Amino acid sequence: MIEVRSLKIDYGSPGSAVRAVDGVDFTLDRGRSLALIGPSGCGKTTILFSISGLLLPTEGTITISGTPVTGPRRDVALILQNAGLLPWKTVWQNANLSLLLSGDYPKQDAGAVLDELGLSEVKDRYPAELSEGMKRRVGIARALSTAPSVMLMDEPLASLDTLTRERIQDLFLTLWRTHKFSLILVTHDIEEAAFLGQEILVLTERPARIKERVENPEMGGLDYRESAAYTQTVRKLREVLEK
Ligand SMILES: Nc1ncnc2c1ncn2[C@@H]1O[C@H](COP(=O)(O)OP(=O)(O)O)[C@@H](O)[C@H]1O
Ligand SMILES: [Mg+2]
Image (spheres, rainbow, N blue to C red):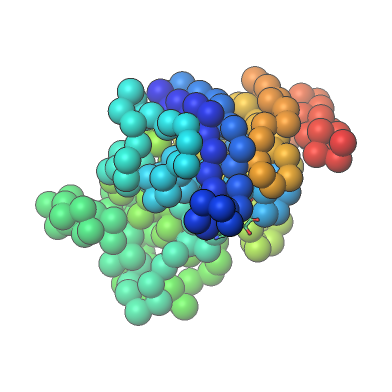
């Protein structure tokens, strides 16, 4: 369903260009999950932005459901590093921002999603009045409000404490299973990749290429962290990243 072919991306102008991505190929079938892991500055965000249509490839092609990506699409949602909340807007307004920008609000609203994420009672609060975990959930509500078929996440849990991070990873897993979107998660966190990726692509240092493809078929349960398969995937990823 998502096809990335010979993707190359340069920053700057021809002649003085910096190559960030140098020939990345993968496909992701509908409803599956893929983690991209690699060192800081290797080109992960660049790849994700190109899939979201915010950045056009220098060479190569990206198609979603058979259509080339030429700009942002309404069936593709993107969750960024911090939740991306506007401090002067309430939880309700922040959660409805995507629907407002697409012209669908107030015909549609994020009410049901806020309910699902346990945020209905705080809908009139401002971001400063929320815990970090709640802020992330408002960002997730915004992304889910448009019922996307593709969810892109760029290190969405960086800078959270361990317990909150694991709780939100659990939430991502549950949402992926219930909403059945295709998931591409960018992370530099080995445990996160092993918990959420059915397949994990390990990237090289910049310019990003695929160093190794790691299958992780037994993921999918909330208790996966306790399993031997998880430990094995984590060990494998560490090995590949270090070599
Ligand atoms: N707008 C830009 N202009 C020039 N170079 C950039 C720009 N954005 C990112 N880069 C460079 O491209 C490389 C990849 O960046 P990025 O995709 O953000 O890496 P990652 O997300 O893996 O940390 C980095 O070395 C970065 O310095
Ligand atoms: Mg990045």
